[in-house]
Length: 294
Image 1 (cartoon, one colour):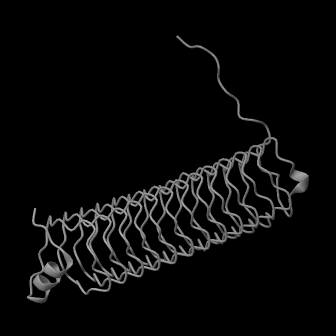
Image 2 (tube, helix red, strand yellow; image 1 turned 90 degrees about the vertical axis):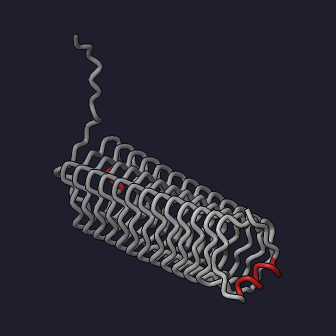
Image 3 (tube, one colour; image 1 turned 90 degrees about the horizontal axis):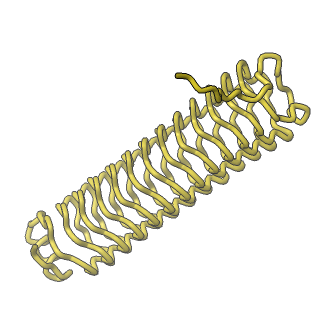
């Protein structure tokens, strides 16, 4: 594994070299450098000072960037599959159309970052901070965002199917037209989030908080909203066919022209709901078969 300090690496790059695969660059200072299209596959750049660095279309597959400073770095269209970015600071970084499939981004800082059209399929963003990040038309299918902070983030038109957002914070997030089908959203906080036309088919929203959220025209077919807080949420024209709202808190929730056919509403105070048609709902609790068969 070749070792590089900043002077040596920049000289090699200036001389036309682009391959720095498996290089040892631990703690290197490359702030503001232009390293576009360089190949850092498997390189160790942990704790590197890379703020403002230009890495457009660079190859960082399986590179180690733990605890690196990448504030305001330009990583447009960079290939970063399986990259190690745990505890890295990517505040206001540009990752437009970057490929970050199965990346390790645990507790990374992505405040105000641009992740539009990025591929984050299967990435681990547990406890990551994506406050006010731009994640429009991106792929986060099967990504892990347990306890992540996405308050004020813009995620419209993104694929979040099969995502894990357990205990995540999405206060005021823009989730219009997103695909959250079969997502694991237990105890997630969607207060005042915009989920207009979102696909939440068979999503698990047990104990989730949707106070003041906009779910107009959303698809919640078969969704599990057991013990969810729906205070003041707007479900106008939403599809809740077969959804489970057992013990949900529905004070001042608006269900104008919502489809509640076959929805389970056991232990729900229907008198607190606005504009709902409960003529086709199931009001008794689910029966559990405790019989023993041979």
